[in-house]
Every structure is written in structure tokens, then in C-alpha cells.
Image (cartoon, rainbow, N blue to C red; front, side, top):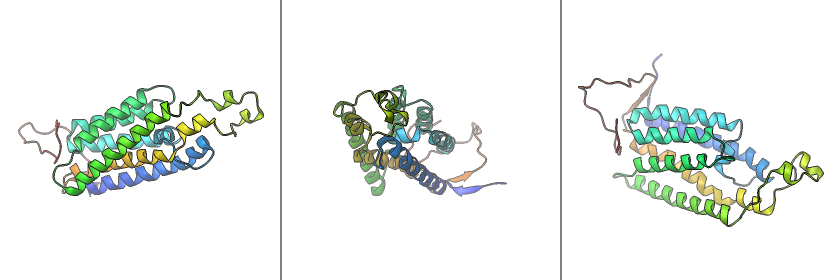
Length: 228
């Protein structure tokens, strides 16, 4: 069986699946985290089981798919996201570092060339990223959340058995906020930016030749800066 599709169509299908997965994870995990459906950190939702496994599978497909574009930075960026979701964001800062560096790689590689819509999306993505970064800094230093584990925090009360009580106010401030919508827009739009650097006629196939004849000239994808 030989499957052929325009690569741009494949990427849009993948982006749609990512948005659906994110919304399902956010709907469920936000209630467990905040006691109500209110936006939370996307990484918190996607590193919670069973969504971590689905996210890792998605990132792995993104790494493999980026081979079509012959871009070192895109491959490194998507592999960085894959690695970020392997580690626990609740126990180490490695998750945050990997997300930051990987996002920087993808934003750099997807810097706009000539399309006004591409430029508008890139700058809008950058703006939402800065808003998100500002909120994340405030959530740590402005909210000043206490060390919180519901089973330990409510150990002297009956509600500690099932963590049914709401978290302390400082924790609620840090974990639950409508400002987290800026993270969702940034994350989804950043993935969407890759659409612009995919050549219009590039076809996705189920067979990829990773090693080409040395005498054959390489084909450079539009907008790509670092190539194999």
C-alpha cells in the first residue's frame, strides 16, 4: 500500500487532532486541579495520564514528519517537545527548559518570508507567547503559591482522604486562571506556523528515502535556514 497526500493537508489534520486532544485533557484535568472547569497550564494537562502517552505519540509523529523539511531546528524542536513530556513537570525544571528552547527553535525556523498572513500569524504568536511568559512569571512570584499536596495539606481533616477540598488561595491563583488561554493560543499557533514553510506541492508518503545520492542537489524548503 502506498499512501500519498499533500503534506500541508497532513499537517492541518495533525494540528486539528492536537487541539482536540488538548481540549479533552484540559476539560478533565482542570476540574481535578481547580474543582471547576477553568483554564490551567497546558503542560499540566498533557503530562497527566493517560494524556502524556498520547502527547508523546503525537510529538514522535511530528519529529518523523519534520524529516520531510530537511530542517535541523525543526527536528530538534519537536524532539525537544517529545523529551519535555517524558519528564515530570512537577518534580524538575527540565520540562520548562526543554519547552522554552524547543519553542525558540521552531519560532526561529518559521520566521516569515513574504506572505502578509504568515507575518501576521508569526507576530501574533510572538505576542501571545510574551503574554503567557508574563503570566507564568506572575503565577510564581505574584501568587507565591505554598507547597501543596492535598493529602498532606489536609492530613488532619476528613477531606484529606479524597482531596475534595479546594486548594489554598495562593495555589488556586497560580494553577487556575483565564490568562492560561494565552498559552493555548501560542502553542497551537506555533505548530500552525510550520504550515507556511511546507512547499505547496510537497507530498507526504509512507516511504521516505533518508539517504539521497550525493550527486543529487538538495531541495531547500522555503524559509528553512539550517539544512542537512
